[in-house]
Length: 298
Image 1 (cartoon, one colour):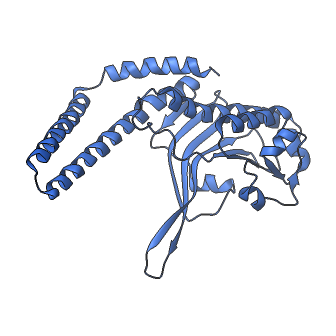
Image 2 (cartoon, helix red, strand yellow; image 1 turned 45 degrees about the vertical axis):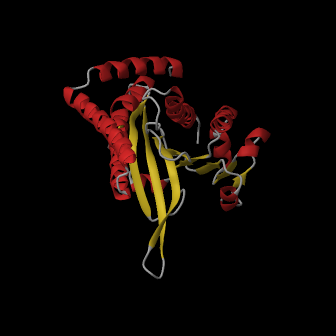
Image 3 (cartoon, one colour; image 1 turned 120 degrees about the horizontal axis):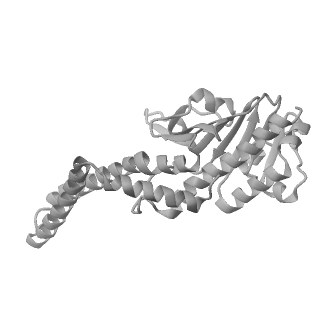
């Protein structure tokens, strides 16, 4: 895989070229928004000077809020239509970003992470990693609800972040779970199937449970464990990894990603590096485990 600086440079060139060829309609929309904003500010200043009624200020503030909402939505859509597809394509041209893509509830449930009531998926990266490994990553939101005696429903977020499903070359015949949270989640998954790995550094940050200890040791090699430790330390994000039958799953507790960072340029280096990092880590570990499964007698 290419390093981020190379990908960023190529992505920047492509994005700038596309933005330079914007249609007159888009240019008109942007200009109209800017004109409206300037007029609104002028009117607001004038209203303060002549001391118009407070109700007028309320309407004007609502108009300004609507302006910012529409402009933010437009820029976010453009970001997802131009920037993220270029970033993903330049990482691996066998993968593609789909703004309207998703992962199904069935696929998510197969990983057996948690129970919930409401499921939502959007923005997916799909394709064949290196032209070989089936890869699917998407934003996921799961929620539960509670209704009080007055009929008011409250929504609670169970999980918000990235989820990835990778198809392995064969059935592993084992359930293997790696959890990076040693607190509440670690206590939940503590069981007789917990495995002590041969890395003290790994044990400080992760819990491993498996239906087959030997297979877990075969697939969670020192090389794979080092990748998990490095990502955990560098990203400061909690994540889980699981292997079930012929599937490998990742889940990152990172909230909704692939969004334009507020008040920042489309090509904000830090934002794109963060998105690249989730993809790059998932792909590197996926390839290693895919090859281990393929080459190991399980």
